[in-house]
Length: 558
Image (cartoon, rainbow, N blue to C red; front, side, top):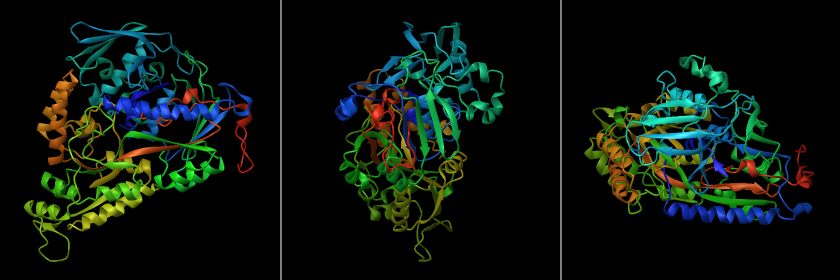
């Protein structure tokens, strides 16, 4: 029922704030999905209710980068980590925080501290999980030697103190609107990492062989092939129903669809909208549309002199045909984007219209910024240098591979010479983190807090501001909005911030994409959600008659 908040949020890792109209919309989607799941499962094969056992196979588009939450940046790693780790609290399907490892907490009257009381808990190797693990984990997230991309998220926490083995107090630098959200972080096993040098975190054993505190633990990881999760026998809560979950790495979208239709996999996330009608017509499959927080965007590297000024970036954004991208890449399952806070979140600016493709206006603005085609070769120049740059993107994703062709065509129409570099997912993310790009065409999973600070704050270059965007006015608006506990009062500040990001854009936000999840009928009680396509993995079950595949499968799955 819960979602391991950070992981499912960042992934590309990365996670921002919610609610209002979003809750109603999410509830409608989830409710519909739940009815479908229940009607598909009741009575089938003579089984009237959930039973334990069996193996589910879930397709992943790429290998996780690393399974250490201190270091992970990919959304795929976040999805897997979420199933291995519990937090002190976790976000439920109604987007509220519920007790998890902590059974209760209290906030000090002055709002400057929050104290959590932990349940008895164990790691998957049987060692106790105590307040020392919690305090040590926060210290590592804040440690400059670790250089976690999430380090800046905890700037409001002065420190955490273990009052005893089951009690942790977080001391805050200032009053924050939501102390529970502000103090959420992953917990790593201190008895394993406490004696290790934080400067060598890139080679720690938990990067590839993590311990677990959630319903599942990692049994094996064959890189670029599969990860196998099994039930965590030391988990103190309600145990997972499935014996095993296989995350199979299938980079090619066409292969994922074929394996889904032949029964080799049971669930595929990010299904191509072009396949939606075909899959929906099959009686053995169910297609669930979860709207929400996926944003296709073109990140600018502001350290590139050609892209450093706001007018140039704004002009290039005006050259992009968002309506065509939505129609071509996601068959209408989406809408043009205007900024980094998507419509599912409470503080999305609902009166701010997305930029309309206007090449003439783009050319005029480029000319104002000094870009002219002096030699008539079709490429504009400024100070003798042509507007020439490279777009980095991920290979193996048809939407990105086709989308980058459209982007290059749009940009060429206003005089920009664009090359494309397509790379394997993990290698591309590494290049992005190192700042070795001009522009990056990717997919952002906005966090559930409606807080774009990790992407747009000037100081967030060690988080997800890989383009080194810097705007003191945006920083001030972030500080003001994030310090306001009353949403009604904060909303105009958030709206002003989004308006200013249109004028001085760190990225060209292209479109908000729906997520399509295909589920085979043999899986019961599967509820894909805004939080994650495998949101309630521990509740999935398979009736005994369905635990072997049909004749089209290459091998049975128990």
